Image (cartoon, rainbow, N blue to C red; front, side, top):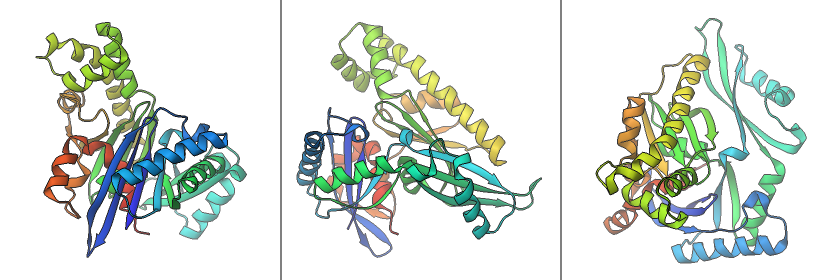
Amino acid sequence: MSVGLDIGSKTIKVVELAKVGQGFSLKAAGAVSFQGVQVDKLGEEKEIAQFASTLKKLFADARITSRRVVLSIPESLAFTRTVKFPLLTNEEIESAVKWEAEEYIPIPVRDAVVRHQILERQETGNPPQVLVQVIAVPRLLIDKYVNVASAAGLEVIAIETELLALSRTWGAPDKTTMLADFGARSTNVGIIKNSQLFLSRSIPTAGEAFSRAVSMGLGVTPIQAEEYKATYGLTEGQLEGKVGRALKPVLSVISDELKKTMSYFQLETRNEPPRSIILSGGSAGLPGMAAELTRLLNMEVQVGNPFTRPDIAIDPDSAKSLANFAPIYAVSVGLALRED
């Protein structure tokens, strides 16, 4: 069994997959909302115990059998950078990253866990170069995630960033795709090529910004705004289009950032820009979201359902019950798909 645990700022998602031949079978999935202290802010034993209690209840309610988990770290709390090197050997690149890491990350190396992977060797470029992804996560942050998981009786076997997990969920050979994962407080944006994450960033505009816009625009309470947002989204024909008009300026900000990300990717990596974008997360399924982004970006936009992957078997009843919530499980599915 493989369990992916995605701890967001407002919801926790978990997925359990079983290996079956060359593919997987969905054994269980569940999600829970919470309003407590975020993991990176946990300090007192009481806070850790409360968070651990939430995890225990989620695992029990979702009927997760394994206690060995792969965890995700919020993109906004990790430092990810694509670095250009001359045509060095793998060993030379490893040595260079080790000794020069502080040039690429904003925290002391002694306080971070640093990993790298070679993305692409551009031997015919001018000049020839190697693209290397460097990821650094504060050790203290990793310790907090491991501690709260341990308090819940879980064994952490691996930790990775949210976009790395998403690149596993949506990656495909010989294809370049943009990802936009809407959280409550930030939208994670990534570009994957040949199933590898080439570029990642976090935009501080997401679900809560959408809700605030509706609340202020329509003069309703935050709770009502959440309901209106989920029910009417960006559609024109509902509620005289008032909700859509409130949401569009926020989505326009995100759209502009997506365009900047594509331009930067093309300039820095010498690659063609992505031709399609996959949406996931809580706001991905808002009515009219994909259509409006298609208009703004002039490219193919689809709402991702990780449970429709051909290598994941799922019974019809589970597929039906998860269909409306599938986009929120994209990270946890990617975590559970990790086999190494």
